[in-house]
Image 1 (cartoon, rainbow, N blue to C red):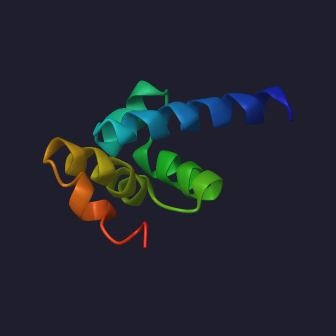
Image 2 (image 1 turned 30 degrees about the horizontal axis):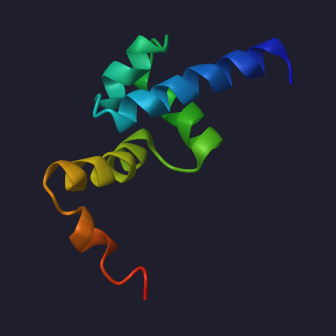
Length: 80
């Protein structure tokens, strides 16, 4: 892996962590150095197979459920 690819993956991984914390996609893009939100979205989709907004919804849902005390309800039936 070349330096450019390594740097891009590092930036996108950091953006994914920000999205998981509830940071909006446009803000995450800016924080990791993307000047263009569409370019960030394209790079994110190419790397992870989903849009930043879809990833944010998927990554933040378990945390929101835990904050609301719904972990037991979410996990109900998984142990059967």
